[in-house]
Length: 114
Image (tube, rainbow, N blue to C red; front, side, top):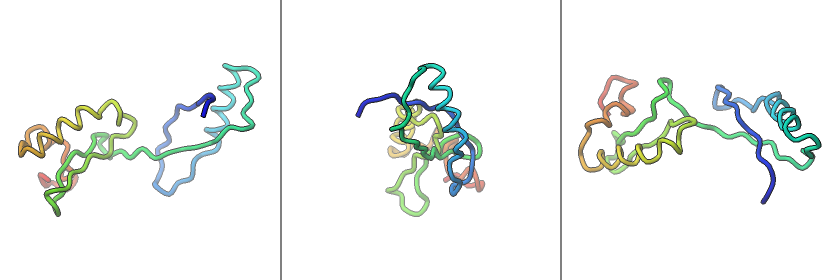
């Protein structure tokens, strides 16, 4: 495909919340401001979920139910920029070093280490 992608907002809402159409309309106006004559007739309006944690820190953690399962979630808008560091922390966890990983444990929300 080819074309122009216009985006740039974060809406903090519940998991079942529908996208706010006013944001799409605003982005369309901004796009037309930068590119007068922009044809948006064939445009696609899309929104995606970016899970984040209440403390804005991702979860990098071993499952308490199955020690062979590891979690890496809740990065919000920083998934790509956190990718390498998250992988490094998970590798440490897999090797048995809880060190820095304790700060990212899902257990931080219930007072447990993991």
